[in-house]
Every structure is written in C-alpha cells, then in structure tokens.
Length: 159
Image (cartoon, rainbow, N blue to C red; front, side):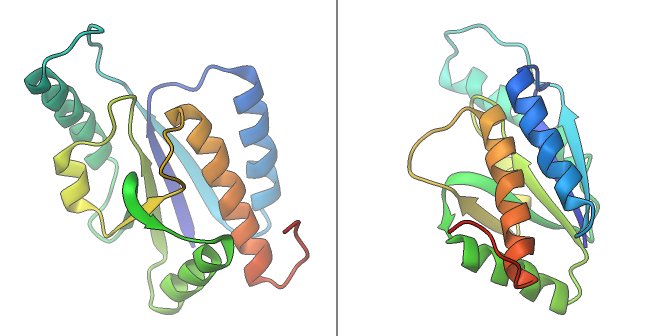
C-alpha cells in the first residue's frame, strides 16, 4: 500500500518534525508513506465569508493537483466518521483487500478544506469533535497509521 499524506502549510515546529520522523522510520517496514506539503494561501486575519471560501478553494486546487484519479482519498474533517484504532486498521485491511493500493489522507489549513476537496473525498475521517492545529494532526495521523499496521500484523501496541 502506498500512503500519501497531503497537508496545507510547511511544518516548522521541531518537536513535531522529530515526532513525525520517528513514526516515518517505524513505518518503513510496513508500508510506503510520503508526505506532501502544499503552500497555504496568504490571507489577512479578518476574512469575509467569501474570502474564506476563496482561500479554501485555492488551497484545494493545490491539494487536488497532487491526487491521481486511482487514489482513494480520505479527508480529515470534523464532520467525518470517528473510528477506533481497531476500526482504522480494519479499514486499511479492507482497502488493501479490494485493490485500493494508493491511499491519500488530506489535512486542510487553518480554515479547513474547501468544497472542491470534500467533493473529491471517498471518505471523511474525524479524530474528534475538538479542533486541533492542522500541523499537530499530521503527527497524530501518522501515529495512528503506525498503530493500525501493528494491529493488522497482530503485534503488541499500547492500548
């Protein structure tokens, strides 16, 4: 399985970079994983609703340009389906069984994902009803991908 994580904005915080690097290293024995960062749209603090939509649309175009037609895309969204770690592992296993060898997770910028991206999504995943910084979500997602592979292989992992 080839997994791509596409996110908006450049990851700068050292502690997040180190955590992500650690999980990427651990994942090499399970799957191929690629991180793709697309530029965030520069915008002033106080945006009108129309300006917000425009920012999300432009970021969405950058995201969609990175996703091939044969890729199963999962958007991280607050209104997505919440799954346990075991359910996420089962989802990976099922996708692999049904020939979905390319998988992309998409993490939006500070304003979220645009409608253009949400329409393309094959699935929506939520980690919580709470809002998390989008850069922190990348680390949480990668840890859960690692946990899922450990579960699928029947290997021990903290519960």
